[in-house]
Image (cartoon, rainbow, N blue to C red):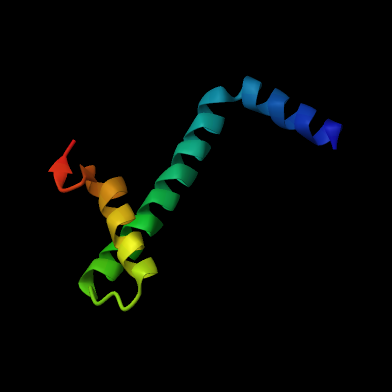
Amino acid sequence: MSTFWYKLGKQAFDKSWYFIAVWVAVFAIVLATDGIRYVHIMQHPDYPTRVGQHCAQYGKRIFFGEWNGRQS
């Protein structure tokens, strides 16, 4: 296992721009999928449970920066 981490670190050091670009792409994909999921949730705003209400408030905080109804 240590050999794997050594080779990965060496490759990341040798090709730093490529490695950074891959991580940025992965991060963008994760944010895009979360954004798509959030838009889908907001199109169907009937939250039958307290968990659904909490998730909606959490989504607003993350994507719009709203804390207690105020813009940050």
